[in-house]
Length: 146
Ligand SMILES: C[S@@+](CC[C@H](N)C(=O)[O-])C[C@H]1O[C@@H](n2cnc3c(N)ncnc32)[C@H](O)[C@@H]1O
Image (tube, rainbow, N blue to C red; front, side):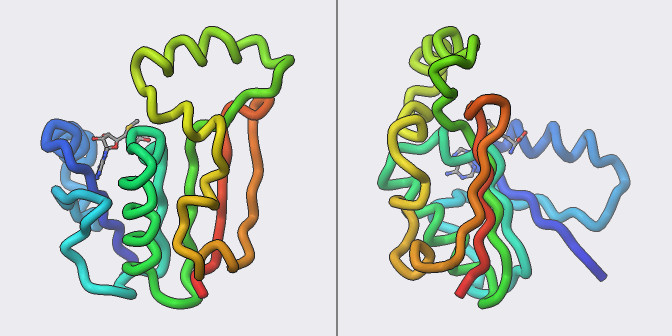
């Protein structure tokens, strides 16, 4: 049977999620730090990091990516969705930049540096599919774990 584990470091987020899920039982909620998971290696077929990395300073981001790789089995998939630098013509570039500078300053590192450079070397060498959306505002990376 397919199962989904959802992890967050903030209990309040997990309380909200539990309320939204109701009686749906195939989701396990884990209160853990994504940069130091208390989980055995190669236990998942896939992992998704959804708007997580922009909250983390670079060294923690690298640890999170290494942990995601560790817990996904060889041949499994890692999907990352997060902020990206909007193109110069994107009308939301300036207001979004100002907002992120105030509320989520680490996200601006995602505007400047590709996520790939924070990955462990073995992951950097894999085939990575990378796309951006909405005039560059968001990015998605899909990599197959070697
Ligand atoms: C912008 S929210 C995105 C939440 C959710 N993925 C979504 O798309 O709705 C980022 C989440 O990452 C969580 N977070 C930040 N650092 C974390 C870490 N080291 N380990 C686990 N969760 C973390 C925050 O608590 C927050 O709930």
